[in-house]
Amino acid sequence: MRIIADVDELKILVGQEVGCSDWLRVDQQRIDAFAAATLDQQWIHVDPERAARESPFRSTIAHGFLTLSLLPHLFGATLRIDGTRMIVNYGLDKVRFPSPVRVDSLLRARFTLAGMTPFAGGLQLEWQSAIECQGTARPVCVAASLMRAYL
Image (cartoon, rainbow, N blue to C red; front, side):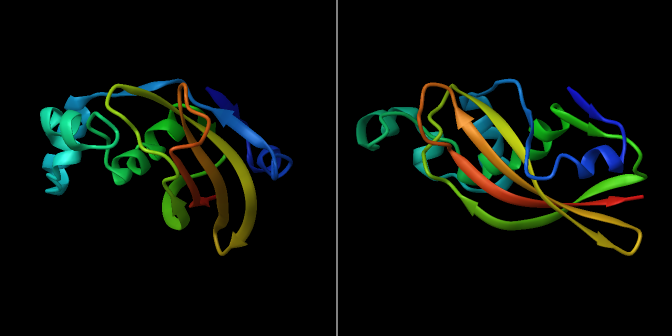
């Protein structure tokens, strides 16, 4: 875990990759739990036998939104920003899923601080996040995510 001491340290990191998470496995149990929580039971996610027969991926794949939803965990396990009262998710500007996440894949995320904008009471942070899958060349998710750090 990288600990950023304060906002002054954060300011000098704009434009740099700030951290890379450890690997996290996306197994069928996690995919099934996400499907149950979101009511998205499409067979390419939850039916391993049918996916093996009919899917071009020859296995189940994770929902794109499951992959995206891992960003807060991966960020929190990678970076801590001290000197703030709280940091909240403010939303996303651009999200793409360039490659599928096959069941039992290992994922990690790289975080680049793309920008900082002051607002009353804090700073808005823009992160370029890229989720990688072990053994593949293309990222499985790229996102511009926004956080608000209250000082």
